[in-house]
Image (cartoon, rainbow over all chains, first blue to last red; front, side):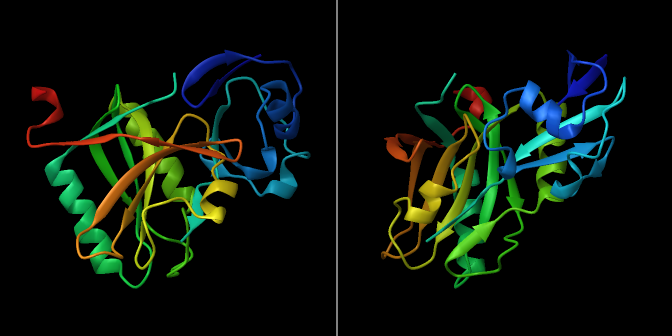
Length: 68
Length: 142
Protein backbone atom coordinates (compact mmCIF):
# COMPACT_ATOMS: atom_id res chain seq x y z
CA UNK A 1 0.00 0.00 0.00
CA UNK A 2 1.01 3.59 -0.45
CA UNK A 3 1.34 5.99 2.46
CA UNK A 4 3.30 9.15 3.11
CA UNK A 5 6.06 9.17 5.71
CA UNK A 6 7.25 12.60 6.75
CA UNK A 7 5.75 13.95 3.54
CA UNK A 8 7.34 11.41 1.20
CA UNK A 9 5.14 8.98 -0.76
CA UNK A 10 6.27 5.50 0.27
CA UNK A 11 5.27 1.93 -0.55
CA UNK A 12 5.00 -0.29 2.53
CA UNK A 13 3.67 -3.77 3.29
CA UNK A 14 -0.08 -4.19 3.63
CA UNK A 15 -1.61 -4.60 7.09
CA UNK A 16 1.26 -3.11 9.04
CA UNK A 17 0.81 -1.81 12.54
CA UNK A 18 2.69 1.31 13.57
CA UNK A 19 5.11 -0.88 15.52
CA UNK A 20 5.61 -3.03 12.42
CA UNK A 21 6.12 0.04 10.25
CA UNK A 22 8.90 1.25 12.56
CA UNK A 23 10.57 -2.15 12.18
CA UNK A 24 10.08 -2.27 8.40
CA UNK A 25 11.54 1.25 8.05
CA UNK A 26 14.48 0.19 10.27
CA UNK A 27 13.83 3.04 12.69
CA UNK A 28 16.49 2.94 15.37
CA UNK A 29 15.42 3.26 19.00
CA UNK A 30 11.66 3.22 18.37
CA UNK A 31 11.15 3.85 22.08
CA UNK A 32 12.50 7.37 21.41
CA UNK A 33 10.14 8.05 18.49
CA UNK A 34 6.82 9.88 18.49
CA UNK A 35 4.37 8.94 15.75
CA UNK A 36 1.51 10.91 14.27
CA UNK A 37 -1.03 9.27 11.93
CA UNK A 38 -3.34 11.54 9.96
CA UNK A 39 -2.69 14.39 12.38
CA UNK A 40 -3.28 12.34 15.55
CA UNK A 41 -0.33 11.73 17.89
CA UNK A 42 -0.36 8.13 19.12
CA UNK A 43 0.45 6.92 22.60
CA UNK A 44 3.47 4.61 22.50
CA UNK A 45 1.43 1.79 24.06
CA UNK A 46 -0.91 1.96 21.04
CA UNK A 47 1.83 1.42 18.42
CA UNK A 48 1.23 -2.36 18.31
CA UNK A 49 -2.56 -2.07 18.12
CA UNK A 50 -2.80 0.68 15.50
CA UNK A 51 -3.04 -0.50 11.90
CA UNK A 52 -1.76 1.65 9.05
CA UNK A 53 -4.13 2.01 6.11
CA UNK A 54 -3.57 2.82 2.46
CA UNK A 55 -3.28 6.59 1.98
CA UNK A 56 -2.39 7.36 5.60
CA UNK A 57 -0.08 10.26 6.39
CA UNK A 58 2.47 9.13 8.95
CA UNK A 59 5.01 11.34 10.68
CA UNK A 60 7.97 10.13 12.76
CA UNK A 61 9.92 12.32 15.15
CA UNK A 62 12.80 11.55 17.44
CA UNK A 63 12.75 12.78 21.02
CA UNK A 64 14.81 15.90 21.48
CA UNK A 65 16.06 16.85 24.90
CA UNK A 66 19.06 16.97 27.16
CA UNK A 67 20.61 18.40 30.27
CA UNK A 68 23.13 20.98 31.45
CA UNK B 1 24.60 13.82 4.46
CA UNK B 2 25.88 14.81 7.88
CA UNK B 3 26.51 18.52 8.40
CA UNK B 4 30.04 19.53 9.34
CA UNK B 5 29.46 23.26 9.70
CA UNK B 6 26.75 25.76 10.51
CA UNK B 7 26.33 29.31 9.26
CA UNK B 8 24.13 31.63 11.26
CA UNK B 9 22.83 35.09 10.40
CA UNK B 10 23.66 37.44 13.30
CA UNK B 11 20.04 38.50 14.01
CA UNK B 12 19.14 34.84 14.53
CA UNK B 13 22.15 34.42 16.84
CA UNK B 14 21.06 37.51 18.77
CA UNK B 15 17.47 36.26 18.97
CA UNK B 16 18.68 32.98 20.47
CA UNK B 17 20.84 34.82 23.01
CA UNK B 18 17.94 37.09 23.97
CA UNK B 19 15.63 34.12 24.36
CA UNK B 20 18.19 32.28 26.50
CA UNK B 21 18.69 35.32 28.70
CA UNK B 22 14.95 35.80 29.13
CA UNK B 23 14.49 32.15 30.08
CA UNK B 24 17.34 32.16 32.65
CA UNK B 25 17.55 30.49 35.13
CA UNK B 26 15.64 27.93 33.07
CA UNK B 27 16.99 26.37 29.89
CA UNK B 28 15.70 27.75 26.58
CA UNK B 29 15.51 25.68 23.40
CA UNK B 30 14.68 25.83 19.73
CA UNK B 31 15.16 24.35 16.28
CA UNK B 32 17.20 25.81 13.42
CA UNK B 33 16.31 25.10 9.82
CA UNK B 34 17.67 26.05 6.43
CA UNK B 35 19.74 24.35 3.78
CA UNK B 36 23.33 23.32 3.16
CA UNK B 37 24.33 24.21 6.71
CA UNK B 38 23.01 27.76 6.35
CA UNK B 39 20.38 28.60 8.95
CA UNK B 40 17.44 30.55 7.53
CA UNK B 41 14.81 30.12 10.22
CA UNK B 42 14.80 29.95 14.01
CA UNK B 43 11.88 28.11 15.57
CA UNK B 44 11.67 28.89 19.30
CA UNK B 45 10.36 25.89 21.20
CA UNK B 46 8.82 25.37 24.63
CA UNK B 47 11.02 23.65 27.19
CA UNK B 48 8.55 21.04 28.45
CA UNK B 49 10.75 20.42 31.48
CA UNK B 50 10.77 24.11 32.53
CA UNK B 51 14.06 23.30 34.27
CA UNK B 52 17.44 24.92 34.85
CA UNK B 53 19.17 21.60 34.17
CA UNK B 54 17.02 19.81 31.60
CA UNK B 55 15.10 20.45 28.44
CA UNK B 56 12.79 18.47 26.19
CA UNK B 57 10.64 19.47 23.26
CA UNK B 58 6.89 18.97 23.13
CA UNK B 59 5.99 16.46 20.37
CA UNK B 60 2.98 18.52 19.21
CA UNK B 61 5.28 21.52 18.64
CA UNK B 62 7.93 19.34 17.04
CA UNK B 63 5.46 17.89 14.54
CA UNK B 64 4.15 21.36 13.67
CA UNK B 65 7.66 22.75 13.17
CA UNK B 66 8.76 19.73 11.14
CA UNK B 67 5.82 20.29 8.76
CA UNK B 68 6.50 24.05 8.56
CA UNK B 69 10.16 23.36 7.74
CA UNK B 70 9.13 20.96 4.98
CA UNK B 71 6.56 23.42 3.60
CA UNK B 72 9.27 26.10 3.42
CA UNK B 73 11.53 23.78 1.44
CA UNK B 74 14.07 23.76 4.26
CA UNK B 75 15.57 20.97 6.33
CA UNK B 76 16.04 20.67 10.08
CA UNK B 77 19.69 21.50 10.71
CA UNK B 78 20.05 21.71 14.47
CA UNK B 79 18.35 21.68 17.82
CA UNK B 80 19.68 24.19 20.34
CA UNK B 81 19.39 24.70 24.05
CA UNK B 82 20.95 26.98 26.60
CA UNK B 83 23.18 26.14 29.51
CA UNK B 84 22.38 29.01 31.89
CA UNK B 85 25.21 28.22 34.31
CA UNK B 86 27.43 25.59 32.69
CA UNK B 87 29.87 25.65 29.75
CA UNK B 88 28.97 25.20 26.08
CA UNK B 89 29.79 21.51 25.99
CA UNK B 90 27.47 18.50 25.79
CA UNK B 91 26.55 17.09 29.17
CA UNK B 92 26.27 13.35 29.77
CA UNK B 93 22.51 13.71 29.40
CA UNK B 94 22.92 15.68 26.15
CA UNK B 95 25.03 12.83 24.75
CA UNK B 96 22.76 10.05 26.01
CA UNK B 97 19.61 11.66 24.61
CA UNK B 98 21.05 12.74 21.23
CA UNK B 99 19.14 10.18 19.19
CA UNK B 100 17.80 12.22 16.25
CA UNK B 101 19.95 11.33 13.25
CA UNK B 102 21.51 14.01 11.06
CA UNK B 103 20.79 16.92 13.39
CA UNK B 104 23.50 19.07 14.97
CA UNK B 105 23.30 20.07 18.61
CA UNK B 106 23.93 23.72 19.39
CA UNK B 107 24.63 24.73 22.98
CA UNK B 108 24.45 28.34 24.07
CA UNK B 109 26.20 28.98 27.37
CA UNK B 110 25.49 32.00 29.51
CA UNK B 111 27.97 30.91 32.18
CA UNK B 112 30.71 33.36 31.15
CA UNK B 113 30.79 37.11 30.81
CA UNK B 114 29.79 36.77 27.14
CA UNK B 115 27.43 34.20 25.58
CA UNK B 116 29.24 31.29 23.99
CA UNK B 117 27.62 29.25 21.22
CA UNK B 118 29.08 25.97 19.99
CA UNK B 119 27.78 23.23 17.72
CA UNK B 120 28.35 19.50 18.04
CA UNK B 121 27.76 16.37 16.07
CA UNK B 122 26.69 13.79 18.63
CA UNK B 123 26.26 10.17 17.59
CA UNK B 124 26.72 6.80 19.25
CA UNK B 125 27.95 8.41 22.45
CA UNK B 126 30.67 10.41 20.72
CA UNK B 127 30.85 14.15 20.20
CA UNK B 128 32.61 16.19 17.59
CA UNK B 129 32.81 19.98 17.59
CA UNK B 130 31.47 21.59 14.42
CA UNK B 131 32.37 25.18 13.48
CA UNK B 132 29.73 27.91 13.58
CA UNK B 133 30.14 30.98 11.38
CA UNK B 134 28.15 34.07 12.33
CA UNK B 135 27.39 36.23 9.28
CA UNK B 136 26.18 39.82 9.13
CA UNK B 137 24.27 39.19 5.90
CA UNK B 138 21.17 37.17 5.18
CA UNK B 139 21.92 33.61 4.09
CA UNK B 140 20.53 34.42 0.63
CA UNK B 141 23.30 37.00 0.20
CA UNK B 142 26.21 34.80 1.28
